[in-house]
Length: 133
Length: 276
Image 1 (cartoon, rainbow over the protein chains, first blue to last red):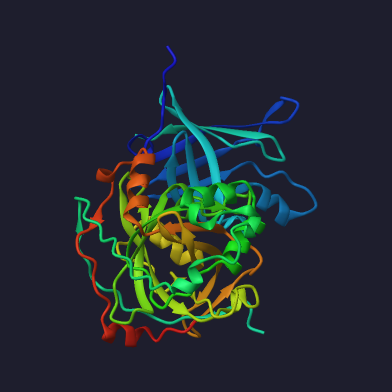
Image 2: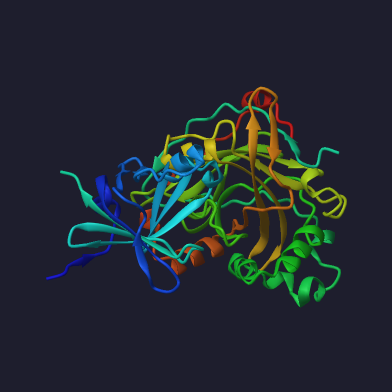
């Protein structure tokens, strides 16, 4: 039986391991963010959060871009607003994100934390996380 | 031209006590000049009747992108005051840009400010009423505030002779080391606000900018004077505080109130050495 639970501070605090990172484009086509994707998401009781994701390098002629494209990380604070969790970024692998809010629709499905972006230029990102014991 | 430069200085924080029972101080120290309370025309600023304004109608204006009307009120309908407000204020806010920026501490998690009484009625400090991530609203994120006759950020916009209230969060911002205070140390903001006539008395219309404070030079650089982070609106009246409680899902018991507001002493004010 599928069980979906609304998020709250108590049930998201902890360390989460990335299970899947899927992007669905405007044509409803889905694909993984990359190969061998792995990541860690941390929510603390103090209100801080940190997310770090890597994927396998894809080699092109631009090594720096290859490395940059294989990293997705930021840290900051989080606040829950209904079914959304807002990450306000204070440090990031992309400095342009600093000061911005990353708004994610969030729910707990069968014990997994599911975070979805809104419609972005690339489509909608859906990340599934499992809590580490 | 120092349009994007704001000078500020340090403040030694004052200890205060918190209580869980609501015991708000709502005394208003606004010293309005009666002759300035009446707008030149009730139909100015988009046909509004200023005395019907509330912080919720102003928030709706901002959300409806009626920025010209808000700027008209901000620039031309402010009241000449000689004292900073004192006490708890109910607040509403609206983000300016579609790209989310600081929507928690300047938006959904924010419900107003607290201005402390001071031995100098033109310089004081205060705190914001921000929802702690674990649930309750708490006095958070201190600011230094001053009533100034003019300001570079609104140079040429506000009618002459109308003072402006400055709020600087940058040094220091913390009282409790909450996560949101650490955030405001890293992602720094700066506020200006002016009072206009409202339904329950004076309402403050405020603008928030992002920037960076330099502790050595005591200069606050606003990144872009033309790019606001948020509008905010304050009402210090008991009527507005009551209406806010009625409107919000979060009732009064969900807020930690300051039992007795500390008085900012002259010795502290001297240490503030406040420029703007």
